[in-house]
Length: 409
Image (cartoon, rainbow, N blue to C red):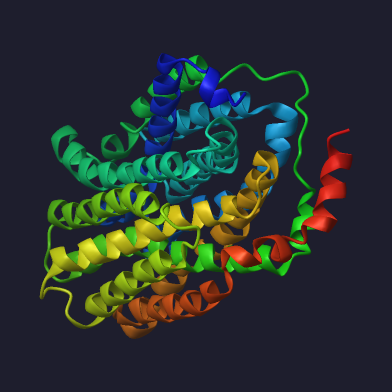
């Protein structure tokens, strides 16, 4: 009998709370930087390309460490991996109280990226295992809280910085939800066995499948747009005369819309096996948002944030679900999801820095928004190939199955 049927209601509630709070911790340390970028740069000596590293480094680590997700879950255990990662997240935020140089800030960004990467690599497989019949809904909750954490960071960082008298406090408070998440995960996830069996095929087997690379590309190009927005949206509007607080509020509104879309669209898309019409809807919303930022940023900024946020948030959660849909075995599905995130976040790490370079060359962010409009067009075409009927053939299950059986013995 499935674990869902045998678990208590209280156990379900506690685990869902752990999923939500863990997700909440994965973005505030990135989105909180943008509204405070001017002050951070002035006091640490970071130029725009240096500020971009505060997004690039965590995203890069999210990519690199995602490849280790299946191994972590099999060898270390999901519970131990997630608890250790949340402790690292809390420590990284706390250390920002004491940084004084640009490289120290980049070091804390690396620490935070390490923690977030580990959680992201392991949690999707846990969700697939614990909620096999409700993957879409629970992944929607996880994605929504992840995006909601982004809204919290963007809104709270400048307000706390203004109240506490400095940007360091505006970033260091993020240690508190990490500590709370540690407590929930310890109570809700079962203890790891000394050596867990893994039903996943090796990473090498997955990487031989073109579909894995297609999913990486789509995930990376879309999340590159997210990375650029959280890095440069607030500075962009500040260059148009907005204050740190108001530009941070704009970023927070976008992140709230991300959270709502990440929660609702998987529920709506769950009525049919083919998620592509909903994915294309999210890509259209992104395209409109990037065009508006490039051409008419102050015409209707709230509307642009609604469209861009809903497009980015919905696409994130649906992309995660599509990866999990490809394989029935939770360990295999988790491994594919980890690899998609690995390659995807490596791609997503670069656009904020590229946009910084384009800004230095042109004196404007318009070229950067145009770059992401092109990326949206590429992803729209690529997702045409991701039909449910193609899953088994695309993953070459006849090849993966023997490797999976060998890995479990």
